[in-house]
Length: 87
Image (tube, rainbow, N blue to C red):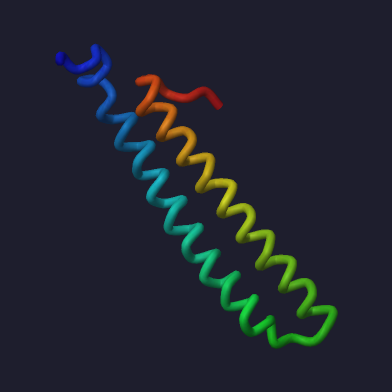
C-alpha cells in the first residue's frame, strides 16, 4: 500500500514529538527514582522540613507523570491521525 499523503511532510513534527516524548520519559524516570527512594527511606528530615520535602517530591513526581502522559498522548495522536495535535 502507498504511504499516507502526509508521510513525507511529517518527519519534522514526528521527530520533535518523539524528542519531547523521550525528554518527558527521562524526566519521569528521574522523578520516579527519587519518589521510590523517598518511599523506602523517607526524607531524613524532621518535621516541618521533612513534610515540605515529601510534598515537593510527590508534586515533582506528579508533574513529571503529567508531562510524560501528555507527550505520549500527543505523539500517539500524531501517529494515528497524521496531524499535529492541538493544545
